[in-house]
Image (cartoon, chains in turn green, yellow):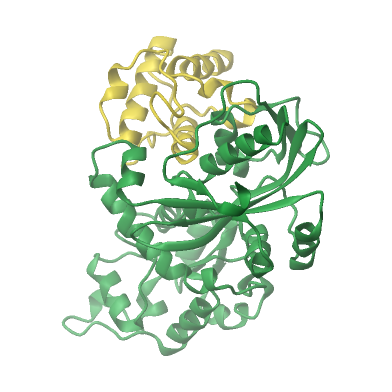
Amino acid sequence: MIKCVVWDLDNTLLAGIYLESAGQPPPADPQMAGLLAELAARGILHAVASRNPPEAGAHAQAQTGHAFAAIRCGWGAKSEAVAAIIDQLGLTAESVAVVDDDSLERAEVAFAHPDVLVLAPHELAEAVTWPQFNPPAVTDEARRRGELYLQRRARSEEAKAFGGSRDDFLRYCGTAVTIAAASPADLPRLHELSVRTHQFNSSAAQVSEEEFGRLLGSPERRVITVRLSDRYADDGLVGACVVRPSGGTWDTELLMMSCRAMGRGVIDALLAWICRAAQAGAATEVTLPCVISPRSVPLRIALTGAGFRAAGPADARTRTAVYARRLDEPLPAMPSWAHAAADLE
Amino acid sequence: MSEPGSGGHSKPQEAGETGVITEVRALLAELTGDERPLTAPAGTPLLRDGIGLDSLGGTLLLTYVRRRFGVDVAGEDLNLDSLATIGTLAAFISARLGGQA
């Protein structure tokens, strides 16, 4: 699924060449600007990577009326600009499409990032009908995604200027993490998270709305949601888990979190809650099967930080290792900005 | 690009563990924007209390380590035991560099 389109400017998003139009920079290409607006309405982000001075990015924003989630203008390789955007927005390469009129630039990006979808402008009109440009569920969170990334940009710029620790910064931002039982209204967003999350998803399987509905109705399971807000933005539902208490063991069958919540204490709060709720429920152990891949590294680091250990090597077929955490050792602390809703007390 | 760890895959000049630990401290200082890791003892934990890396910071650190030393810590160490302290990470990298020599 494509989450972000990275646009070239000259003769792509702009109908002309920025630096060759002294005093009168070119307007937006109407067809490309139309496709950009259409994709933005589907919850897809937009970014700019251009060999131009920084003012060209501001010019493109003014011409298209779209506030880009990231802008990289400079004279380095296009592939490096694309890599920086992927890093900045917390994306994976296969969720990114690059649109560029220059065939050499396209080849350079495709060589450096084999998983990135590289398109010429004339190919984009058809590509927008492909399944990977059509997210199945367009939720409120998805429609507001571009806006949320902008707020994230503001937050990360402030974080750089902030001198204290990460925890101090999260407190300063008024971060609020709310853990609550899922309700039927959450089903579309839960499905969307299962499709869109990769770096923080313990399972490789996508889960349909119907399946989440069944899990929600199952007396053996608890579906738990996490919401995140701070004074920059209300990110809404950013994560969830499905746990199955069984005797002395709470098995966390699924744990997932949006990558835009990365670095904001959400996963730590959720893991701490699971351990504490399991202990309160008289369990002695929490287990969590996790797919082992380069993408799951952030989740594995969070598991290590919360005291989970892999019981053995990953299964060769499913690439899944079972992590476990005993509850007779000191439990991870709930951050001061996280709280569980009343229905979980 | 002036990101930390972008110095390519060249081997550190001093391949011993002492050289690696110095470089790990420098990567941590760049990553956290704080000079304290430069003088932190080898036994300082990397996650949570200690340097205070979260999963995002830990992932960036492993990315820098792969760029700088060509060692894929996450691919080789399932439990990420090497992320316990500055010293354990440096020892893991040194052992892999030694094995390649």
